[in-house]
Image (cartoon, one colour):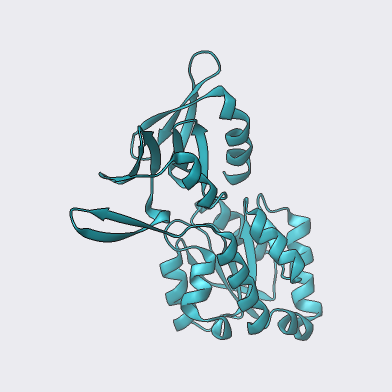
Length: 253
């Protein structure tokens, strides 16, 4: 019996995995987690044989979970991802298994068959050294993870994952984090090159937004859209950037 853990911030994704696993007599769902913090606790405190781990979760990603637990302590790990070009390439390069959302039943069963029929070899492929290489490669691909904010004689280190949106303001850029705004003397184009392309996208020549903060898009005038964020903020998506964001959102949600 394979004691299984499902980790995903999306209820529908967890429900889909639960439904697939419920028909497998040799897999037992021990627990489900909706965020990375819960996943870390579950892996550390429960006896888990295999974890279905979402790559992209707010605040604590799947790779953050691995780092916190330690690669040598991770159960057999099957990654799930909606859109992560760096991770997918890394999985394929290192022969790590992953499930691309929306997860198909055929692909899901193929992964389970690999676990059943070749457990020893699978564990050898998914050993701590290979998993560590994947985490390191993913961290290299993530882009800028910290912004240094200098204000009133203080130096503050800002985690880029906490950023909601960024907007150009003259010779500065405004970095919005919840109710707080920070001004940096830097161009938007320069910062865009350093940010994680799987997390941040440009929606206007003067605006970058964190994809995870987007709630919905609504048509506006002349091919433009209004981007509604989860906190109620509204931003303009110009038509010149529309195709790119539609492609990303279609793959992400």
